[in-house]
Length: 246
Image (tube, rainbow, N blue to C red; front, side):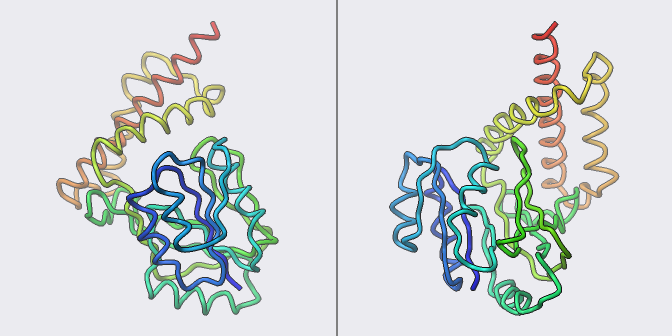
């Protein structure tokens, strides 16, 4: 059996398309972080396995979700992701193998409806298909990851990830995520004047030049600028945290 696990909060505009793309699984488990929009009512139209859980962070939500899964295999999908028919068929074949505890799946990340092929955004492999009994979740504030105790393989077909649907929405998310990352990294990075002055520019050049962002045209330039903005906010917030302890 295969379960799909979806964690969400206030995702009424995304969640239905996500759940439709997972209609083929044996069990569909949704963990909702006390949404204030219509997310819950939409989810209940597609599965009875919908659980409300106070939002304490991404990692905690995923751990809670895993505790509700009853299948041997789990496919972990976010509300802004879609499973294609090609990926579904590959997954159904992959889980019949006994050699692997999990599989890395590539993601096609979209920026304002355009697939970003460079800037480190593709293939963007993630371990999101794994045996339930082997899975663990890293304790991170943001960009948490699954791990398994055993051998992992790679699938060929991609999960579709509509990560940036508007500039405003992405800006708000960057502000939220950079705060979480700053708390996590404040004791690991020493941010000073030179760091603030030069490091964000290096991050921009890495995305736009070294990782080929320029090959994606205007979209690639916007991705690189957002990366610069993300890192600049992160470093300033780390600096702020460091100064508050002086």
